[in-house]
Image (tube, helix red, strand yellow):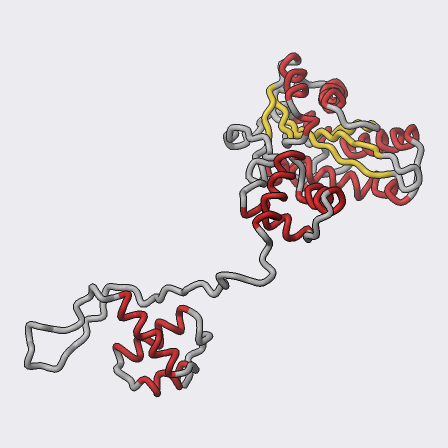
Length: 320
């Protein structure tokens, strides 16, 4: 019966060698059981013997007995040699490689711009994939547009009162008729679930900070800490304004969207229940603001939340 694993996989190679060296089955039988040619199995055996020459395979203490094999305590793996050819008729010339690197160093742009310059300005024939491969092999992308790293924040605190921790984020949609963008600066208090949203036609740190301060004025309690993602609108200017207002700022960890789970869920609710219809038709901005104000009043005073034991945000604020 043949082995279940593929013949050329490392597991199948180890199985074949054990059958041949430990179980002492004939080479032809092992080759048939493993589904490989006997020449291939013999080549594996020779390679294994060369890799394990340092192991004492014969029991010299008992020369009168039949030779035994001590096959315990070492690896059965066989190093796989690369099948990559040493040369290829369509290999990119060294002159073209140096041209790509020189253009990259001069323009300091992405692979698409480098490829466009080489093909249109210099008149050389090369594919975009080849340019990308050359830049990747020479590590030209290692330092390109690295995200701004922040020190690891401690675990998110669990608020025990209103204003101890709020989350803020920004979403946008494009008007299907005018083509303009509208940005929604959303804010939510994690303890009471009180929410606030500011609409603007631009994305700026000042507008993001204004949304937080307007939320503080609308809710009627002081904010102690605000948490945001690593977007450009929540950079140094935003942090400076918050510190001037005696509000601490913390940022979510890179690549961890669950750190802002509450505001992300509010964004989804806002899109589904309020502003989702605007994405398919053009609505004047004053009318959107009126509709948003009515929805926020409903959200904060009438809509119950499962996360706060089916209470309303206003009810949680009164209980605190």
